[in-house]
Length: 173
Image (cartoon, rainbow, N blue to C red):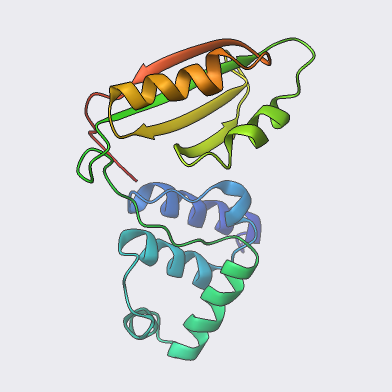
């Protein structure tokens, strides 16, 4: 009896998620064919890997890899980022802020406020104890305190901010 495409896709998804330690969200997996999933997996393992070496391993042309990567970037399925350790590059204070907005405030409005600030590394609306999670990098504890005073303690849209100061990174990326 033939396996259904859905069963095969599910098995492939599990391999991508667990077989090589690389995790690709289910929503993205459903929009990517097997070749694209394999390209993404290879790039997650080594983001500087050449298209020619990927093509060689997959048995397709370099142009095909280049076109697929360009398509995934255009559709925002794939983005290349440099991940750095804040302490190693001179940011002596970093924190993750759990923010609860005041009643009547839309979390997206506050997210849009934090997004352009140079100290914020990422901003996410979440469900649960907090409405927003914001990561902040500062040159020193004084600058972090100033950021908190200027952007978290004074604005009248925040009901609660829990500041979780980073002490040491164990896994990044």
